[in-house]
Length: 477
Image 1 (cartoon, rainbow, N blue to C red):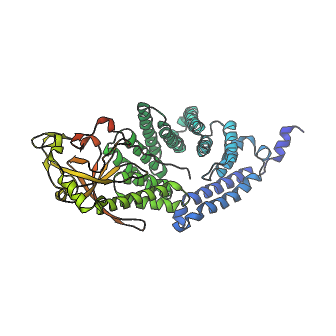
Image 2: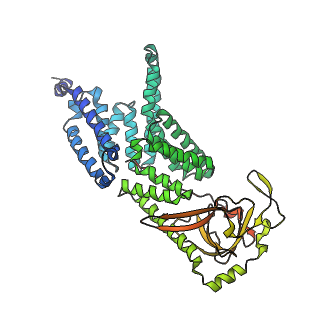
Image 3: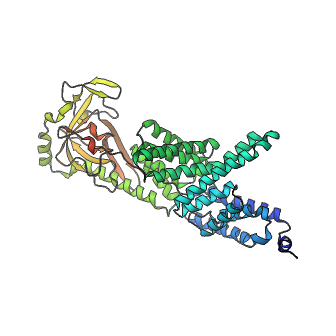
């Protein structure tokens, strides 16, 4: 008897039913993971990985009980190996067994797009960005190859439109993962190249969303891409608005809604917008969804400490004694208004020939204070692990104390105690919150461009301007 004949005799008699059953079991396993918080209280978050692992191990036993080389016909081996690798790959950590199965699957069938995508995720978990990128690009390449080979047949049977939609659905994972990789690689490139990579990242994420506008994970990736564009390319408020809109769309999908990444990255954006209460809530919720995950814990601790420090700095006026504080305030010289002094004209956005009126900080209104300028003394600053924004407190003749948050100020720069600071058209915000971790109540003035303020009568130099950088996080759970 020939070897081929021997193999044929070992093939499972009901192989089609076995494959169908394993496919159903695999779908149920991933649904159990992805919809966990739709069916379980958030208090069970600590048990999620353990419960998923138990179900995975039970399914792994079914896969490992089958000898792929003898019991599965050659025509189905690539699909079987893909499914087996996907089962191994459900863990948030790298599993070399998944890589082995998926590598064999794409060798047996290079056009198996799902296997390329799954292999890319394996490499990504193993911090092998180069091979992950190659895998996702391979998936896109083979989708195109399949499309052009079969397009003629589908035209003949009038199903081309349905087939295009089918291919697109299978393709969005490649697009969004490439979007993530491009953003990660941008940190190692020169500014011009990095900007181009980030903009390309946004386009890929948009394309992924277009494949299925109900896919919340794609919306999350798009939100992250916009967030990166805002910080690394141009701080256009419209971009940040698009970012928050994408996160809102992501939240409508039960799968994305249960992912801590969504809340962590949204918290980063909210923190920059100085919507502190909402930022704290999002970091807190990310911690509850994935208790072992460290980034949201760190951000929650940093922001809580920052708010506590800001509250204390303003409340105690830098802990300066009354006499010392009085001397500082009395030494404020209107000559320090410099270019913002009486009789001068300025351009703010679309408004030209604007004159400024010196007012006390106690006269400021919440929101924009157009046509106003303040002059005050620095009484203290906040030293934090995260230097963005550079934050200091000022006091003027009204003895009111406010925080000034300055973004895009180069590391090592900033105002020190005793400096006289002039801020034109100050935008005032009131921050008040009471949460288990922190209680705070203070006012602040936000400055996005440090070159708009004067320190001791002199404008901050262009050499002290540096774009704020932020890191968004996306993990495959």
